[in-house]
Amino acid sequence: MPAPTIIYEDNHLLVVQKPPGRLAQPDGSERPDLLTWAGAYLARNKPGRAFVGLIHRLDRAVGGVMALAKTSKAAARLGREFRERRIKKLYLALVTGSPPDSQGRMGQYLVRDGALTRPARSGEAGALAVLNWRLKRRLGDLSLLEVDLETGFKHQIRAQLAGLGLPVAGDVRYRSPLAGPGPAIGLWARSLTLVHPVRREELTFTAEPADLWPWSLVG
Image 1 (tube, helix red, strand yellow):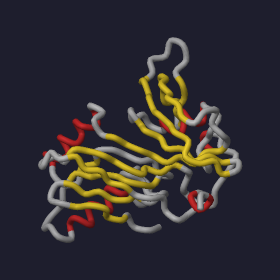
Image 2 (cartoon, one colour):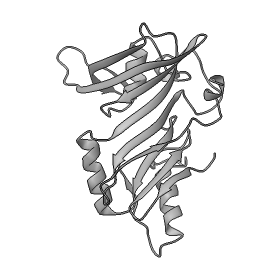
Image 3 (cartoon, helix red, strand yellow):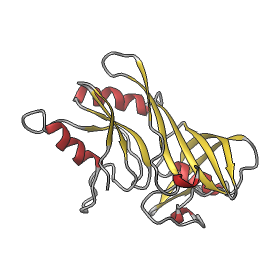
Image 4 (cartoon, one colour):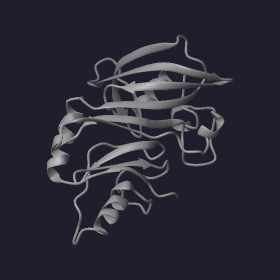
């Protein structure tokens, strides 16, 4: 598995491109994770154990931009930005099928049900999940969407697009008819916009999809 690629680094912030197939944090297995990798990377230049703050996550099968905090102050401030929904996250989603319109907005209450996320049933107390999507290209039986994620529920994009009849390519957990040869699915964290925790300036970080399936189908 390829190592994460460093996009940006200063005394407070480490921004990387996470490869699909790598966990965001340890799960008790032997599978590689980003948090352990970042701790080892930072420890090379700092005596003792380096601080690494995980302030958001990407699913194991999803690649793209992730930000990590290098100090407790940065972790607290960036964590507050995420909780207050002041972080802007844009994703690319390669889905099976064709959307009914060129763009749309989805807002619904979701719940976790075992390993899956689904719409809340009547009487269930779900969490409100909101996203906006825009059609970028049609590619035969596939469509490439840009997704503006307003909230951060686990598997939110995967579940909501599947509910729209547009399962993410390779995401068999959410009924994609297209299975892939590797760990990646057609969901990519393309950009992340945040306010620097110390300098207080707005920064945007981007990463293009890795050259592997299913992104190799886009051309």
